[in-house]
Amino acid sequence: MSVPPILKLYNTLTRAKEEFTPIDPANVRMYVCGPTVYDYAHIGNARPVIVFDVLFRLLRHVYGEAHVKYVRNITDVDDKINARAAERGISIRELTEETNTIFQADVKALGCLDPTVQPRATEHIAEMIAIMQRLIASGHAYAADGHVLFSVPSMPDYGKLSRRPLDEMIAGARVDVAPYKKADTDFVLWKPSSGSEPGWDSPWGRGRPGWHLECSAMSWKHLGEVFDIHGGGIDLVFPHHENEIAQSRCAFGHDVMANVWMHNGFLQVEGEKMSKSLGNFVTIHELLHTEKFGGHMWSGPVLRLAMLRTHYRQPMDFTSKALEEAKKKIENWIRAVRITLGGEALALGPSSDVIAALADDLNTHSALTALDRMFNTSGDEQAKAHRQLGADLVFLGLASRSELKKPHVEASHVRADEVDALIAARIAARAVKNWAESDRIRDELVAMGVVLKDNKDGTTTWEVKR
Ligand code: AMP
Ligand code: ZN
Image (tube, rainbow, N blue to C red):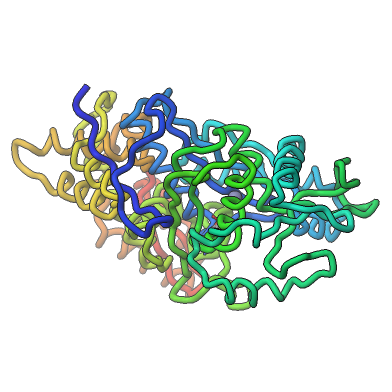
């Protein structure tokens, strides 16, 4: 095997791009905060899933598939879940199962590999209780009124990740004042459950965990007390990740919980923060299966490509224009690869250009520029470049080997001007309610492999069906 590339990753903890050195190269460990399963995941939620999937693929390439463990949890206990289940009149279990099934299908369509483990919070109550017992024993937590709270003043360097000034944190925490808190900044590890709320028996009575504690318990169980990489969206830095760090470090007595903390930037839709009231809130499911966004359905690879064109730490604007461009690009790439392969199977790994780009803090933009270069190669080098393009598409999760192996159906017998003329004739026939003629023309087009789509705005667009 060739020398592995030096991997550089931006670490939120140090605010610097650093050379990545795993604790144990034979067991590289990454944890990413997963979904709270109460509703469809939106396209913003897809960003960390895709970004860390690319990192997972890169780590597997560098350290070997058997030497990377990727844990992405499923938060299946949360007050939002309780509220939604009650609203819909179904059980919590039904809601979390249904939502998780949809989430898994969505992210599979987006080309994401299954993480090594997808632990569920509700299956880690014993670990949560064990962490709280350690924290209480060492003076970092206390029980009060059926609650267990983390004592922020007990940890002198609390706040290292977010670098928030203490007075700001106190002001933030004041929103959540409660008589059982010793300090305003203390946060809940465990809270009591009433009869109708989900709850588990604990030394402090029947109750349920706070969200932060869930991730400390699951990462500990599956990755150990200290691991390599912890990821999530930038909004999780404070308080979620700060509190995970406080719990895990104080329970296990280490300087760090994870060595590298990585955060993706936020996604906006058509220049605005996504929100239900603005009407630009869009789920992965809607993008894949409905025509709600931009007038048609989008394939998983198109969504993935659009996402990867922006560097993961930059804010990104998700637009239908960018999706149209991504769609064209991917169609051109796949056509070129299919023509070159001519039905042959592809047995190549990723190019050194793509690996080098990703090794530089996941520079997916530059990796995609390398694909453009391969696509634009002409002459004697073209066949080789297009094969490599295929291999890189597979590596990046943008195409499957079996799809690239499919023969390219040449659609050159369809002439655009001829199709446009037939469409114009069909519109004219419809205008005079000559349905028979309109149908005859449509059938003629179908025979040519052309599929028509009558849009709401009165225009007709077409595609050649392969
Ligand atoms: P949540 O369900 O809000 O806990 O979010 C799940 C994951 O999606 C977290 O890693 C969030 O940081 C991330 N996330 C939520 N909204 C966005 C967004 N608009 N852009 C990028 N990431 C997001
Ligand atoms: Zn978490």
